[in-house]
Image 1 (cartoon, rainbow, N blue to C red):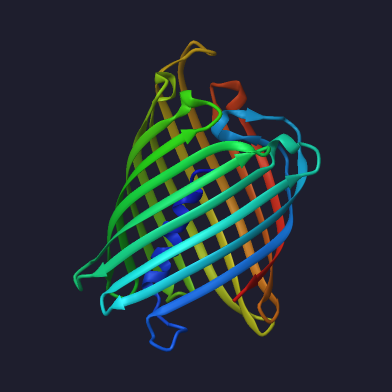
Image 2: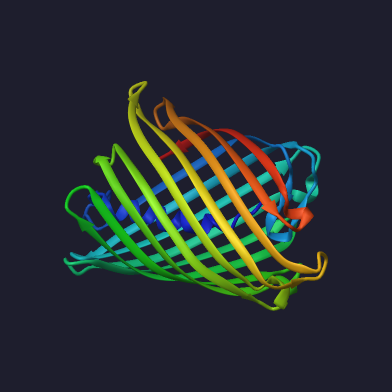
Length: 307
């Protein structure tokens, strides 16, 4: 299942990186590269594609594979450039039509003006469903951020998005949103809380998919020394509401969606660069469109190798 909220994962990862002292690997101290590969299994209680309002009503297990490449350069004292690429593949045991392959790329430039940091972030996602082209997603997001004292980091952003559904052009849409995140440090980067909100809307090719959107999130991160390495525990809650502004033909009224999700994940070192990653997520989808009204449990286990 493709969740376009994954595009915000890039912003979150880069935001955290921008707060961490820069450690370069190259001799000239201006360049850093990291890579990651992963493989494992996932179990989903209701296989489907939320972006197409489709679900099977049945569960399945799937093999999952992934790879990431992160680049960071500091060509000037106050300028940081970042680029990322991520590949993921899901192979279901029974529901092969829902096998999902995604290619995610991002580029970012950030400048430190001392009073604030300002930057621009570009995300791109190409997704294939069942072997066929499914979705091209782009996001352009200028932002500003500021560290307030030693315990609070604030980030505000505007996001323009463009969705191109390769199998259902009626859902093609552009969107605008305002975003704000607050990082509250309880023990530096070893323990902190993230609170965030988003307000915006989408204008689709077919008016019945036009919608106003509202979202809130809260996340807790704890880093622990374990088995000779560093373990990372993450837990979060998220609420999203989408109010459609035109009549949905199949139900004869304006559609309303609410999604509440809760998740927890822990990554623990096993040996050297190898770690085991365990995750669980629960989603409660409430909608007056029957095909979008269901709950879901997703569990995941994978081995991760990072350099």
